[in-house]
Length: 218
Image (cartoon, rainbow, N blue to C red):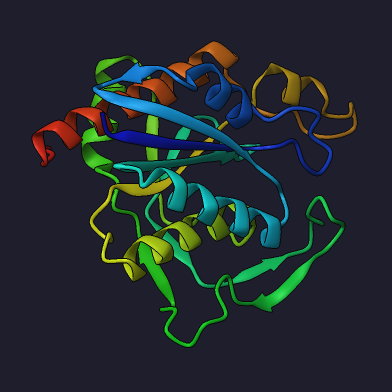
C-alpha cells in the first residue's frame, strides 16, 4: 500500500499548542483513501527539521507528502502554491535563532522556487463538498513552513520523483492557541481541533484517490 507522509510541527514562539501536530497524531497509522498514513512531528529549527524530513522521505519513499503547520491569524485552511529558496524571519525558531536573506537550500543547483504538486483545485472542491472553507495562498511566508515545503520538493525532484504530490497546508489556530493570546492582543480566529483534523483527513483522502487513479480532475 502506498504511503502518505503527513508532517506537523511542534509548538513554537508563544503558542502552547500546534494544531498540525494534533492532526498528524490523530491520523497516524490509519488507512485513508487507500494510502497508509505515516505521521511525523518536525522540530521548529531549520537544520534539524531538514535532516528529519529528508530521513523520513528516504525511509518511507512516500507516494504523497502533505506537510502541515500553524498559520495563527488565518481563519481557514490554506494550501500553499509556492515555496521560495529563502529563510528570512525575526520570530526566533525553537533554537533561538533568526535568519536574514538566507537560503533554504544552499546548493548551487537549488532553484529560486518550487511550485506545489498537490492537486490544489480538487482539494478545494473536496473541502467545499465537505462544508470546509479553504483557500489557496501565494505565500507560505519565509519561516519553517516555507522551508520544509521547499526542502521536500527539492529532495524529491533531485531523485527523479518531482511528480510525487507534495506541498504545504497551513492550518488556523485551535482553541488552545487562541485562548493563550494575551488580553492586550487582538483575538485570533480559530477552528475546533476536530474540524482542523477533518480538513487534513479530507485532503489525505483526495491524495489517496488520486494516487490510485494516477490523475486528478477539477
